[in-house]
Length: 150
Image (cartoon, rainbow, N blue to C red; front, top):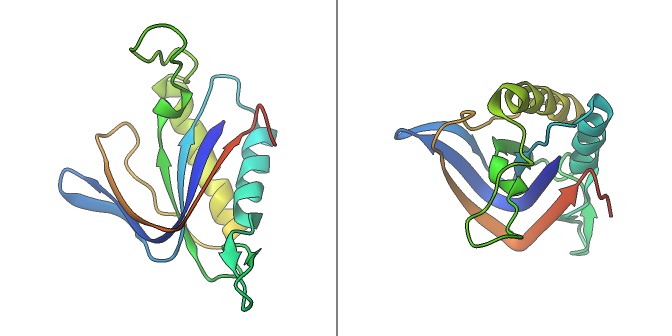
């Protein structure tokens, strides 16, 4: 599983002109899945994201997680995080899980995020052409790969 996490002042996902998910301050999580994901990997990633200390404390130091900062999480499925550009200029998506595999993975991941966060997690619409708008706060952007945790 690969995620791109952005600390945001606000973010929203729109599909066909209708907003499907919106948050104020918090984290925008773009999530991609490979075919060999495990429940343990989904658990680890959800807990890691919620515990990630990327919000400023009273001293201005990034020392608070999203819960402590009173933030929310918006999750968007994004298979393109598994793009391979080794050959040529057209990305290959062969490492990304097919929709029938990645959709249930995404749904379970969102539920695990919601449980760890203690509140519902709005999302985009799986498989739809989505427009994601955000105000990146900082900017703070973190990439995490469950197959290569750093």
